[in-house]
Length: 430
Image 1 (tube, rainbow, N blue to C red):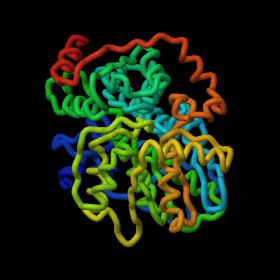
Image 2 (cartoon, helix red, strand yellow):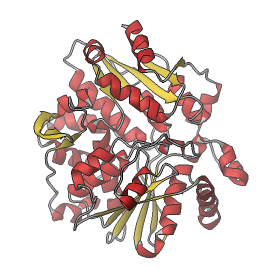
Image 3 (cartoon, rainbow, N blue to C red):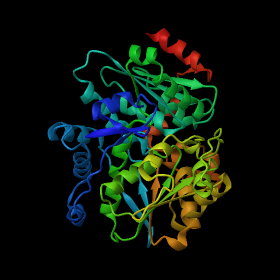
């Protein structure tokens, strides 16, 4: 398996280099040089595979012998220990539940797989690796859980102060050990900017052996392609599929494109965003105009400069579509998001989180052209402020592994948005 930078397709690296570097030297993001599609017969018999077996098949197809089968099987089996059930709300409308992992969010797939992969790649190295990750909500908790007590790895999580839900904050600030939480006086984009600058700082990169666990890292995106195959497997009607993908940094959508390039039959992808509507405006005007993120109730999608836009441009060019696949994107405001929560419960007796509600409302806007829709449900509703749910708050059941967090003491370090402050902090550790 070889990977190229989105800014220089002529320079290729192996998987290990791409995973440890995160960002290429030219500041580009890594993408597989080629995707070899499964034979059509694979999809004819896809229902015979368990979820873990399916994940292993996808890895083998992508890695092309980069990691031997036994080691790859161990990585998959240790990472993917939970399901991704498909729930049918009505004919032609399904919810793919991606919140059955340890931290009740879809980020568990990427974080746990990356932790296992990194541990495998790191096993013969003497130098400790430092993971840097910026989070607007669920990524931090998933990375903290996935990497907790992994040997020879330290994790530093940067999150925007006051802009993640209380339970999300507890998930990333209460573990201790090899996990450190930095509470940044700014937005997610400020956190992401600090992380990107750190990787381009030669002094820090060499001293701390830095690695990113954000979706800029290819190791995060590969496992997120798994559940697109799993959704297809569970469908009764496998024709004319449209995935509606709640989107912030656009890693989840990019992973769906990976699945499609591996042959998964998909008619359409619709990226559902909140009021941070950079991509819908781009598809409408052709202008990519990042701006400071707006705080919304679907906080994990509060991204004003989506990193994976660059990958999508590299994969598709400026039009983002071709003969085989089409990508659309629409935005939803907070009032519509709350209506989505209320309406799905009233109509289906099914409770969803704010991010899934963004997807549901985008589905409704496009219902007349969607014959077989799957909405990716990214997090359990109990992770969010009950005020979002109004009269439905009493219907929320909080799983024990989440309710136990309330009694734990938050432990974070406050820093400014200035990169030099972060650099001083990091150097003080080493």
